[in-house]
Length: 85
Image (tube, helix red, strand yellow):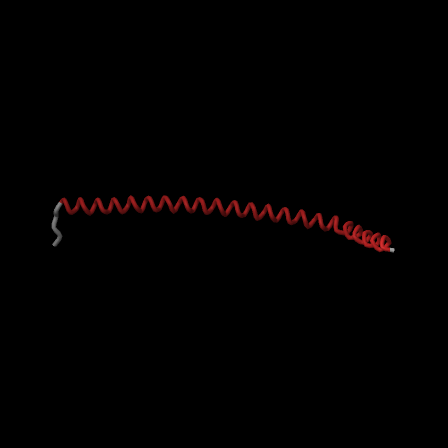
């Protein structure tokens, strides 16, 4: 049978309260970590989108100007051959 001593009950309640306080602090830290994680994910997704945009622009530029650059390269080769003669 359990003894009904107020000191013991007070001690147990203090221990429970201390445990709950510690759990609350840990939970707040976990919530903060989740917020930071979500912010990092959003930043990484934005950078990924920015990189994709740049790559698409480079690809468009290459489609537009590559034929011109190829023609210039051929003309340069012809001029080099003429220069050597």
